[in-house]
Image (cartoon, rainbow, N blue to C red; front, side, top):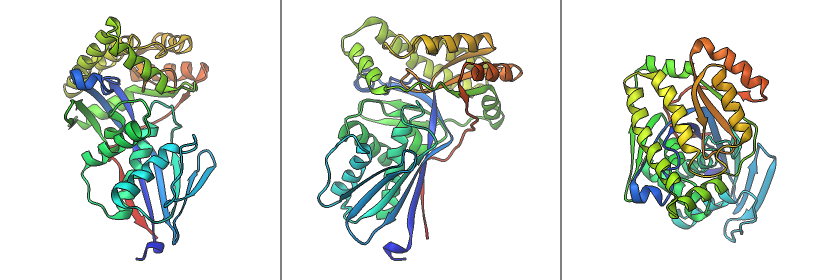
Length: 344
């Protein structure tokens, strides 16, 4: 097929974070090592590339009906409009010789600021699509690291490393971060345990907009200043990531749910803004409705919140969250990470 006979599509899964979030942020993991436990779910970010015969680039967000056009040879400056996408294009232009025009369509099952890793997942999906379009061989580690570089270094957006690795690899993973390497440990968990865990989890959208970068900046500042409570909390939630991994492998799900509660209480000590009055009230009401534990998925401040609950109390919890104005989102775990394909 010639370049104008096909289009490229890609998708990458969003993730929920169980434990360790924040210990994947520099410079903590470089000094002490970080560890997170997360799982990808059947909610995705999608990318479509339609090659053109000229050098014009047209980026279109289908979620927000925003379009931006420019010439790939001349480039463009950051202006607050789809800048993360432009950084990804620039990376492939400068490093891999991308020199052709195309239409790039973007769509996500969750908005930015959701706490499900949507911004990082978008970068992974774009990079995966470009690797397919240019027929560049790559490893999963290379895809994750390149996506991290685009988002955190080139674009300068605050955050950690877990989202890029989760979206790239897929599945339930225990990921360790060191100053010189990242190690992804896929967990081989019994199907019955996974089904039971799915049955016992409730994911809901709080509806609060959040600026995770500001929260992460405060977390990093607390660590650099040696703020004792914040640093101690980081150490503690890293330990909990190891403990919760072991609980999953041992099929001890109720203790896993209770540890979500302890992890959340430690996480709130890392920086101001991780929780607020509305989130605290939702959490108290959820515990009264039967939840054993829960936590915000992501940096905090809003977005999605996850609860563990006995299935017999699940409908009570869902009714309570709905009454409080939250939107409950059904989901299931998925094993496959970022993928791309060609179609006519």
